[in-house]
Image: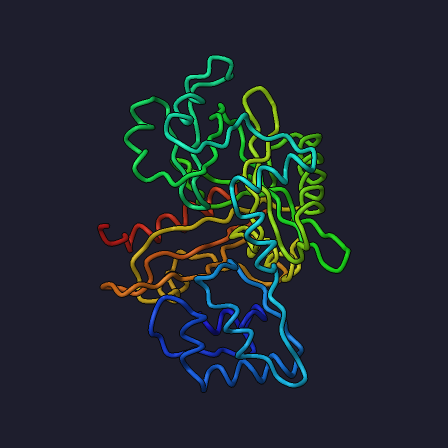
Length: 355
């Protein structure tokens, strides 16, 4: 697998592996002075800054910056903590979208279960179901009062309650806001299973007028988030009535950012292909097991047809790799579907361990 990355000019020039003491890479690095010294040298030589997936107190990023400061350079974290926390909050994220003049679902900020139930029973609402959003990953979808009451013990207040619409499509777009300039990635469609995100597909099936609005709305949202710099994304829904609503702001690299940038970097125009990023569960020793399967179709430079596998997620189990991501790309929808059948068939040979 490492040789394959090298052939794509995608093998990192430096690979630094701190001793593992926990699942937090930053804390592991801070506890391994030899690895930290290697990082500090590179940061100083190249005047590097830090772009992070999350920026909250649990990550140890303030300590990392302190440990990387040298007389000649102090790295900066993007996004900064203030921008991250402002946009990552479900309540504040909705407020910024509305400040930008971007439509959002019918919603209410609730401080008690009674308020949640009152919103649910409000006869003026257009739909019955609700999404209850306590935190970034604390989402509850409820269609009945009983479902709300069963979930209630896990609620933390205040929280946001949104109307649950009949969704035709869930598009998303990522942007880079850097030193006054803005660059947009392609609009993609999210792949959802039981309302859990499992990937993205290109091109989006959104009508062109709504795709244009998605780009415009995302730019406007980025403009109102204080001091935002770096990568951010906004998720939308298109309802069965063709209404467009912003439903989530992600002030960070999103999982769909990486495959898009990778395809662009190896010379593939996102306007000319069909592509799909997905996460799949499996049970293998390493990614070479998948790559070396005789049925596998590897993506190569200069040829927009194949599968690129990456991001193995490792836990201490019978086999190390529990799931990984892939991006499949082709010139036609039919060919893309065939490539996905290939990866599905290979993964079936290595089923995930029971939960």
